Length: 603
Image 1 (cartoon, helix red, strand yellow):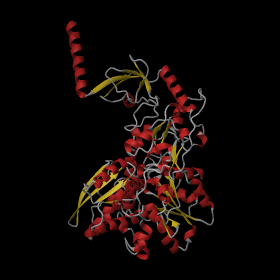
Image 2: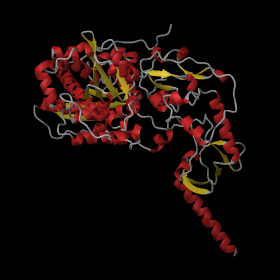
Image 3: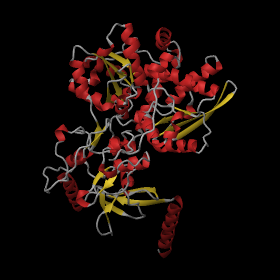
Image 4: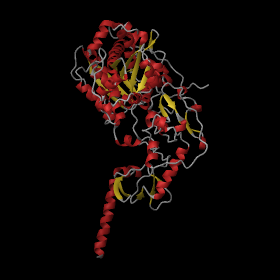
């Protein structure tokens, strides 16, 4: 018997050593044992066995600070509560996630948050998709036990893109961490102390007056309605109801692979056909495809790159179709603006073409045309308002609405989106290439431009058109191409933290590249600040970027035309109107300029 006990003990000791050598620990959560890697938090361990622990401030890999105290649990042998999002699992731990004491503590914490929170849920932009609202429902909060003075902060709506409503802020700091850690901008932070604490900017100024780039990633991170886009829905409805106005709408490639999510469709569903039908039912006179505008951008951008390569122009040349990136460059690297392509972004080019070529060809008074762009990006609102974005006194684009705003308009019109039949974009501006479609994801602009540049330099059509080296989620991707006997080094940067790395290389004269694509939003337009907002739990478990990007690439794969210069609509408009890429008329309508801007506008 003694020998049997000793053998059992030695076996247990051996198993323990094996576990330690594997770098794993075993803990018990609510009666269930789970083995996880060392360093795993209790929150992640619980998730592995299907136990849900509520969170608010938690954002995986970005904001793991335990500030909100909603994820508290009890650990046997320890006094007080443990914050599960930061507490690492330890061998032999026994964790209880839902005791009476834990429930009561969470309710008190949530009650305190709600006591200093605006109660206008019915008219809040995030109603129905608010993590605070969902948690209050889950914890069955029916009364606010605590009452008293509320923090007084003014709404900041000076920016053309983003509105801040401090009364809806729960001080979770998810926006702060996103701005600091992901984008490395740091435009917002927590100011003041105690009851007066708030998330704001330098000297509590407007976002419009500090180094905010309007990328909108803070909106995507916010669990409530404290940050949201500046809506243009009412202005667009007014134009649609005006019989004297001819309203044309165009939609970006990333919108079609995300709009369905607002109506319960799977993430990444290509809902192009239903989206077009919905826009026509809403009442737009013409529904065009921004992918066609992207084809114009490629024609001009590829031509500009080749001219710089052959004539000693400024290299590396950097793409300029991301307005958040352009604002970042103007505020931080004014001395390097010559590296940016002078091309307008696709929707701005397309707006200029609609108010010139399209208007003249179809006998429509230019002054009566209103152009509306549906974009995955809140910075596009800023872009369309830039003074440079007009020709002969006419704005290229009059209004920008986000994917989320379009969904609201569809709901306002009482349209059952999921039951709609599919429709095609209107001609003559509805035909686009697969190259135009891949603009919606990181690396897409570069890949599309290279397809045209390579054909032009080689003076023949190249069959191999997929440049997979520039695809994927890596922050900086690079490749070397051998084209017409020349070596061309290209790079793709996604997210402003990576843009900074690229620009610092150029600043010190150590950039090895000839051509660079930069997108402000990590993952590109599919993850833009105007796209459907996903909760922290979805973001932690689903690769939203990959699903949307895959859908974009499928559009390209199924396209009959996969190179911008082979698009017959593009060929026709150059022949009838613009003459050739880089022409005098092309520069008038399709190109722009940039200027150095102060980081702060503080009086």
